[in-house]
Image 1 (cartoon, rainbow, N blue to C red):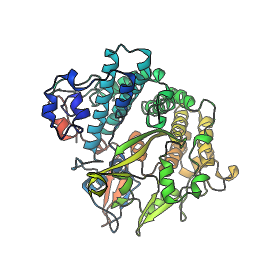
Image 2: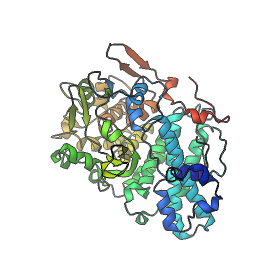
Image 3: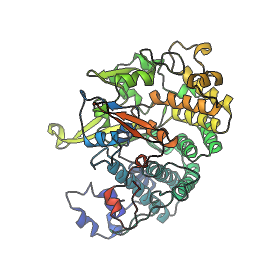
Image 4: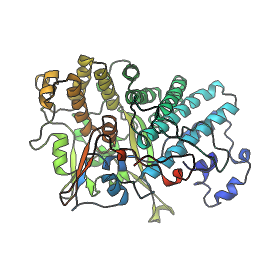
Length: 489
């Protein structure tokens, strides 16, 4: 990771015109005074990764293909499609995400140190909880992108990522990689300590912070990935304490269908959308470019993923998602918008793009609980969750026709095992729900799915189940630290 001080990570962009060297020459206690709960809260606004993983994650999945006649080409999209180490270090690259995640961790650690120095009074405790959850989340994302996906048989020896819990106080700080198991243990420690401290009423716009529901939602993902299904179910039930899941799901069969494409993009990442449990504002071009990259979703993939034009889907019905088209071959679901911040005011021609992303949602929690039930062979409970989802996604829903049963799933996938059939069903239902959001990549990692990509010449490229390229290589800057080992290739 960046070998800079905590305050360099947090503040150098703001002091670029003054020069970072001059800033670092000041004594630490002269640079920042975080001495009230309000100041800690303002600092924690930046404790979430401002990078966006969706551009490179989506390009590595089977949701995209080579749409040669359409769209822009750049190194992030191209290298990711061919599972090469991405050459670009610009916005939306793996290097950018690594740096931004560690910057977020640095902010969280700075806030925790300030809270400790101020005596950790009761007014600070909600902010301590948020800092711990934010630190846990950023490390979780890093270990799942830059380390081998969790395997209980190998996690003690698999290379994880540096788990940083203290503010950096020297310019040249050295780090080492912990095991994947150790990183998961530290995430749980932060999660268990931080969650009880959270208070939703301290936030002005709650969905951009770790509320208690968002923390429980994160826990369902974390424990599912850690293969602890009982814990995942426990936290999912805390997200839905009143049992009202349907009222908190996206209304694809209802209100969404009456929105224009532009209205839908705004609504999808709106803070008032109940499905959005955690939103993150990222400095990213994804909101303006996700539809028109060369390596994107084709009509054939759209038909397969959404069950259109004669292609089947597990429900047997028509899914309610609204797809659009760019040019002749590229298809998309309108999910994102973006804000362009011009340099030099309204007359400037250069600037930065910002995209709000839904980091945690009600629908993911429902899927996580269903998958956890399958792991425990509680198939009736899993089917109940799956069919709750189907009821909200199939047009002209008819339970006799569209609901899933074990026999239907096993026949559809031509498999004999109950758990295999239901897992396949969940993964297929998640593809259209989370398309363009990178979720498919994490499912490919967890379930060790192969991926086949084709180029415009008809050549085939395969990412095998345990392919080393599934683990992103660490940025070169991190590898310059003598304590950091590269991922094997």
